[in-house]
Structures are given as structure tokens and as C-alpha cells.
Length: 147
Image (cartoon, rainbow, N blue to C red; front, side):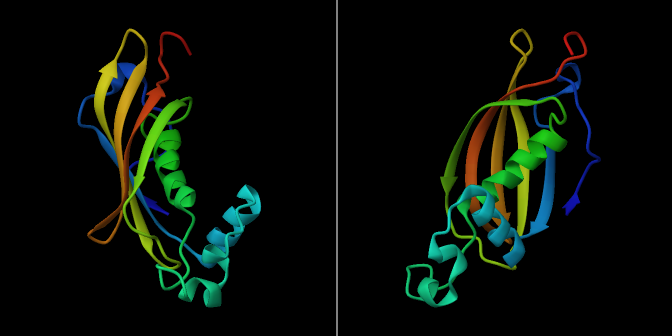
């Protein structure tokens, strides 16, 4: 996994509008198999080459929520990081992710409510120049005053 900053915590007192963190990860067959095992989503479009060839995707694809999980990794590990609590996430899936694709997952601070410790984050994932997922997250950020 390649990302732009070390893991840890950025407290709400240190957040700024426009801050960005990201990671890049190749989605492997093993990732897809493990996600199917954990989630119990064994849809053959994810696991069966022959079945998936006859779908609109013309081949196997990763679970959408596996891709969305990369957004969660950036939020939970980098921005704001450790101690962050997810309050909500909207997602729009734009294109499939296939085994072997390198996904770029990015999170950007768009609003900060210091009084309520709420941070709004613009989120997206891309494979090359193709946006495969976009959305917005609302999180409760860690604070030096309360944690």
C-alpha cells in the first residue's frame, strides 16, 4: 500500500479546509476472496470468471464495498486518523474495479464544525483517470480537549 502520510492522528484542532490524504492499493484476487469470505457476499460476478464474462461487466469485478473500504482506511489511519468515528458516508459507484487494478483513494476536508467535532470529507476513488467511486463522509474527529 502506498500513501502520502504516516498513519496516526490529526486532531480537529489541527485540521484545515482543503487538507488531503490518500493511498494507492492494487486490488488482488486474494483481496476479493477475503472480502467475500468476511462479508459473505459470494456473488459470482466477483468470484467466477466464466459467469462474470456473460455479465454487463464482461469479467470479474471487485465488490463495491471493498473499494469503499479504502476510503475508510484513509479516514481511520490518516485523516483525521486514529480515534475517528464514522457518522455517515454517501457513495456513488461510477465504474467497476477489476482484479489487478490500482485504486487511488482520496479524502479531502471540506467543512469543520469545531463545536460538535464534526468534519465533512469529500471522498473519491479512481483507477487511472477513471473515477470509480465518489461520495461524502461525516466523521467525529478526535480532539486533544476530550480524548
